[in-house]
Amino acid sequence: MKAKSLVVLFFVVFTASFAQEKMSKADKYFYGYSYRAAIAEYKKELAVAPLKNSQLLNLADSYYKMGDFKNASKYYLDVNKRDTTISVHRYNKMLQSLAKTSNLDRVKTFLNSKRTSFSNELLENAQFNYELLQKPTGLNDLNIFSLSENSSQDDFAPAFYKDRLLFSSGRVQKNKKTYEPSGESYLDIYVSRIGSDGNILNSNPFSGIPENSFHEATPNYSEELGRLFYVLSNSENGQLLFDENGKNTLAIGMVNSNGKFDYLLKDLSTSFYYPFYDAQKERLYFAANFNDSYGGTDIYYVYANNGQIMSRPTNLGPRVNSPGNEIAPYVLNDNLYFSSDVFYGLGGMDIYKTNILVDGSFGIPVNLGEGLNSEADDFGFIIKDNGADGFFSYFSSNRKGGKGGDDLYGVKFNDTPGLKTFSLRGSVVNLKSRKGISKAQVRILGDDGSILKEVYANEDGEFSIEIPWHDHITLQATKGRYSIFSATYSDGEYEGIEKVDYNMGLAFIDDLLTDKEEKKVVKIQKFYFDRGKSNITLKIKTELDKVVDAVQRFPQLKLTIESHTNSKGSKRSNQQLSQRRSEAIKTYLTTNGLSSANIKAVGYGEEKLVNNCADGVYCLQFLHNQNERSYIVISNFDEL
Image (cartoon, rainbow, N blue to C red; front, side):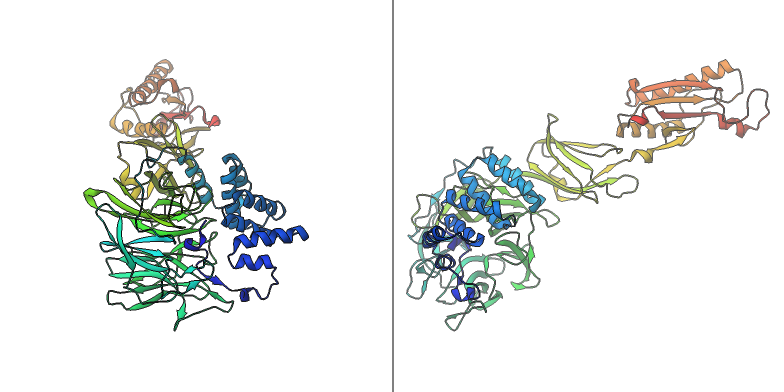
């Protein structure tokens, strides 16, 4: 992995910064980025005495940097056996080394053994991309071409600049000093003309920024602002600036159309990388390694007014940032492209795409797949919509066959690359209280009824779920003692629901039932049949519709319709009348979609009076009315 151009080694750390800790000769080589020499010296020291865990990890890192993943994994595993506190960043390197040398099942086993140390988002991202990379992406036949202006030095970080292309390079220049870790020139920004075929011509040092003897790299030009953002070494009066530990870092600067320069993000102890300005949201994205990093280098943003910083940095969170390194953010059409060396990729650095959702959060990052990504490092992806001509894109890679360490490549797409996904966020709520339902189950089903994805809402009933795009889906939500929510969409009807909070309402069974005469019955208003009749009136229909709704929400319910009369008239006629009334209720329910197999109709006549108004007893009419009633009893309540 060419770490120099991938941000990890942009800055120089002098041995003075380690004065408080006695270092071996191997340590000095390691911290001076001389990995091959560090390996040789660590092996000599190891032959004399055991190395400390920190030194074994340095040795593993050295092998990792040199691309020797077999030996890297050997020493990572050795430390992991003895030191359970190995950082998630080192653990990511271990998993990536194993991915290069072992089968996928072994990587997954180690991942599961430390899953409590990782965020749920990372685990979900890994599972999603493992499944995704087993499917064809359609990118294998891409016409990816190496740009003719590549050199024998590192050329990387392309950026659109008006009708031209900017990029970073380590080419030797008289005005640039030698960068000790690489032995090459400090990085500079170049500009090229873009030919009709997408290739670049006439590359020359870019004159639109102040001349500097040290690093100037990873440019980003904002057409809306007419300003250029880039990173540069912290320096003053032609001399590098160092923090108290002897470290020199990279700042982010901005140049306007008149050549006026301003520092935007500057910290002598922290390096900033790969700025990108999103004019639509007025956000300046960048990569950095702050204390709240999820692993190595994370992606952040700040709000910027006319380019000037207006807020504290915000970490994009564990949906985007991982235990690895994330760099090179680029936004187009609410899609964030970036690169990551997280363990579940195809190579070292891979290019990913994630949807920027309506609430500002991010969907699952999707690996852009084999073809665009390789076994090497692929990063610095940019893309531009050229209308009817499709999308033109450039990126950097150190894949085999290049001229230098990192080379520039071009590719044309008919549409934006990457698997189209369906993302949904919302809440599962109680229909009566409108409060969220904790731990409700949310599913997406395919057109054959198979479960495509299943998640559980949080304590507040909130959920997020994402799957590869399907033309036909069914959304479901349920929880014990709650109804089932189900909605089916087809032929892209559900595109709009991604842009809003999607609420799924469930009825709680206890809200629909009540106790009557020591039985669980559907909660409805008491109704009366016309005297001596069994026809369903409009008022009765209104109440029975509530029963239909309840059973449709809880199709497992079994009903017993129990009708009662008062004591007026003969017992036989009253029993027959109550039976007709129960049958009439059953007929209405089945006519409106309920299954007759789950409904039993019983007429009790005057057999179960609720007061003393029996034959021969004088009672006022309202007392007789108390005995005239119909209940929809839940006959299988104890089984629910």
